[in-house]
Image (cartoon, rainbow, N blue to C red):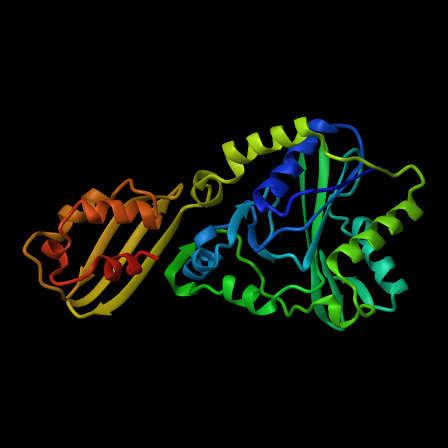
Length: 327
């Protein structure tokens, strides 16, 4: 087994590394460790906007990254250790999560933490989740990756993933918000993400005599950064890849009540209808037509609204008041 400890805390880089390693080591067993600065990792089949508190995420500078695997959205920060096992699929049971979570459970049990695998893919301690796991098959290999909440900022986790469920109607996979806990409350005093990672690596080495550490080369890093630029930091992948959805939101502003209904396909507005009791000198249908085809994204909508005199369509309103209804 090859053990790789990512040198980066950039979520774009680390999620891209998982895909890069499929071509770098097409036959070998791999265990990748990485720690991300504050970020939300979205499941492949999720509607990104329906999983995140967009205003909060933007204000806090939290990265949003779609991963290759399915499952729900998770929050990462420097108090969260992530591990990713890569192995040839062969005749392995895709539904077996126990094999690759066993080293985590074994290590924690040695530290007198009563951890165990429960349900399909969650690791729990005293009934609370501290690790979620997801899987995928790609290029003949199976990847199982998971999180370990060691000392994450739980308040930010809650706020970043808090979204109004009434705004979106879609068939995308929804996250299951389980009761969660962080392991710092159970681990030996002064345990950090880094010290726990070292213990994890030592545990793997005791179970696999042939395990060896590989450091990413400058060429590896350059290729990963190319994948980041072309895919993992793009709006098309992280937001535009979302399944089709309907969005609706209403707000009362001084000019009147305004309600917006959107049909969104591949991240772009396919149909829009604006309702309300506002007074306008121009037909609202004109503005609706100008918004069709735009990204359902603040800057794209802002540009269109700035290019038009929105008071012609809504009366005395501000740009920010109208933008807020699209979010």
